[in-house]
Image (cartoon, rainbow, N blue to C red; front, side):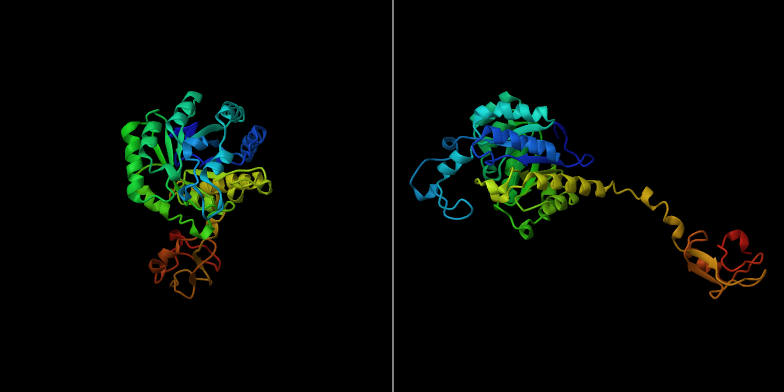
Length: 343
């Protein structure tokens, strides 16, 4: 899969900053968050493309009101009205991201959004956890031929499988899955990163959409094989907004980028070839030495030969073969043993 650059194990993790509702209704603030993401070293900026009327109904029916959680007491229509990123902002946000060397793409929530984003040249689509069960939306996005990055929050394995099958049936742009806990915020101890091991059975690139605080979970996910990391970004949590409580500030996002890339660097390639960092240490491994003067012709015993540091002599595994043989010449105490010294 490629979104601006390859998403693969031999490339550093692809770090996505999520704008969501953190623009607080200001295009200038939204542009500043794009800049903050670029300054932090992120690879991409992700938007959300919807209207409140496209997302839900304005209704007094209890179904359309939030009873608990961070948005308790609000109606869905009111919340999405505040959170939406107006489509007329999108060209400016796409342009700012490109000027800063970042990919910009979005989460569409209906066919109109898919069409709008496709016209803008979005290189990929994100399918949110809440929409993973909307197979018609997935099919619509897949038909553009663009890659789909799909979050798996709340989903069963069967639902994940259906979403992947739908995407592959209707397009060939490729699919990636993001492990996600749809809790806002998510306590670190509920992050369940071993879920990445289970998602590997689907045979697609994996990542994480994370709502926990800080850089711990993203870095740990990269160490467990995540190729994509998505985190919400705001200028300052104190500024408020629907998503502020589970969003990172710019310095924290920069730490996520550093930590994730360091974790990826630490993975290496699994090769048995020893790294350069060990070159100076190898000579201090154990080897066989004479620990007492051994006259010519005398027997080598466990009293006069030992495995000690440093490592200039025969390997310790040769000790059984050495014991009982005789010194070919006089061997002084502190001499590294070599076969040419032994009869």
